[in-house]
Length: 260
Image (cartoon, rainbow, N blue to C red; front, side, top):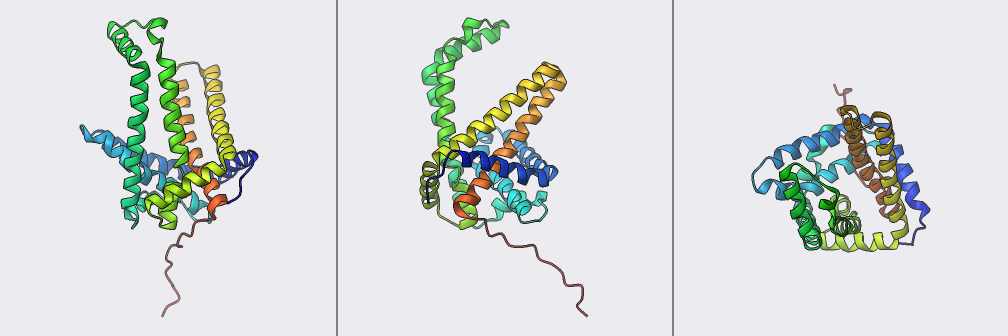
């Protein structure tokens, strides 16, 4: 597994866009199906958020499998939502979800440790109905630290779910290969992350410039966010293909109509 230059990250984004534009409606439909199921999960009291975190790798696998179907010339249909749930490796995917939950807890601990007083002051200001600029002092450091912890952790483990799902690796083995592959291609991953963030940031600025903070503007920003989620997975699929080769997915069964 050779080290990759930074420009490869831009190539991954381009390849991800190529996959997305073949069936944009299908990929967005898969995302909406995942979001619809997530909404009902989050409505569960107490355990809803924990369960949602644990199921995140299975939802991620849905979008990645959609990319694979499109790349191999097939339709990405909503039933792909069941791909992770029906996989014999679902226990390992759920265990990965548990690690994702621990990562989010670690990020929240960092936020409250560094900016706990600022968060308390902000809540009090919200209760008063008036938020002043000084009420947000001290938030930046905690937000940056928690975001960095989650982003770095997620990036290092980003190949784990597809390795478990497509190559039937155990969790510990998949984590090892994910971390090693990401570190060896660190420049490429960094470039891809920066490009995706810049695309979203520039898109949001254009929407605000044209529509302001009106309802249309808010809908536009939400649409860009959803598009960004899909593009992240399309880019991740392109990275996986270059690092580990195209996934071997079985073709759908066909019916022979020529039988007597």
